[in-house]
Length: 360
Ligand code: SAM
Ligand code: SF4
Image 1 (cartoon, rainbow, N blue to C red):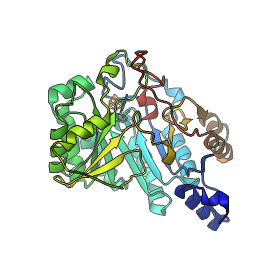
Image 2 (cartoon, helix red, strand yellow):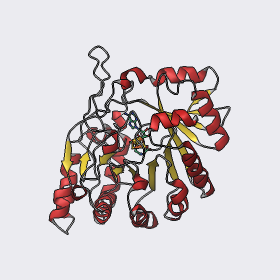
Image 3 (cartoon, rainbow, N blue to C red):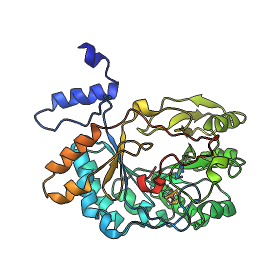
């Protein structure tokens, strides 16, 4: 072993070894300048949504013109190019992925990579409003798990947070997901003064339903038309301390390839995850990049640097130019983000784009 390979993080080293073994058969995998293997692509398939969550969008959002948005065929081509370069996990998100017209066509197409073994997982993050309609088809297409965002179990609070959402419909969607055999993880944004009185109930309810639960810290992304976000910021260290008053949280080394750190809750037997982009640096193990529905690739959720993949994709029917553009972009993946929730300067937006653009 050379001194150089001895210093590689495990993922980078494994990817490199795999590439050496299969050099003749497959192209070199995507490894960034910090030797992190890129194996996880999150794709925002639309910027549109049937909700208007207060921390995510303003009520009068303007959405992208259709011509700028990649067609489903183009999304398939682009995702498949990433799979060809060693991406093993695809997560569709948005906006709300299930409001995109004919979305099942894309999901079924991408499912073919599960069949060949090129992809380990095809999954999505959804607000759950359309799961009643799609859960069975998702399971049939090879989706095994879904993340459903749900911050409260109180119908009135739910209406206030999502502005346009109905809790009943999401509950029906969750029941349909369970009936279809999909594993469900609930994502809840921890909001001081909004759902801080409900976190124990959320843990209990997830235990009853057989769902894992992940708490997310509110992130400074996009102008949402209010100054609320600063006041709602609730560090997950405090959420965890509150949970520990009632639940036994045992350390867990479970990883899903995402940024969450997990604990095992002894009383419910379920996992509780914590995504803490503001209080902890999880960049050193980052294996992800994010694609928007216009074909813009963001190498880091917390940085503005991006690469346009739409132009090379549309310029040629061959994948060569787009593969070259992907490699060039991965070569620029930064070491980490610089989110700040700067209370002194009362500045709550450090990244201009909305979460619905990059999909979280
Ligand atoms: N519409 C889908 C949903 O709500 O699950 C997928 C897209 S949504 C942008 C993905 C995740 O980002 C959701 O769990 C949502 O709660 C979270 N999110 C949105 N804005 C956020 C913010 N400013 N800070 C932290 N999480 C946010
Ligand atoms: Fe829509 Fe998801 Fe954003 Fe809520 S968090 S507005 S459901 S994209």
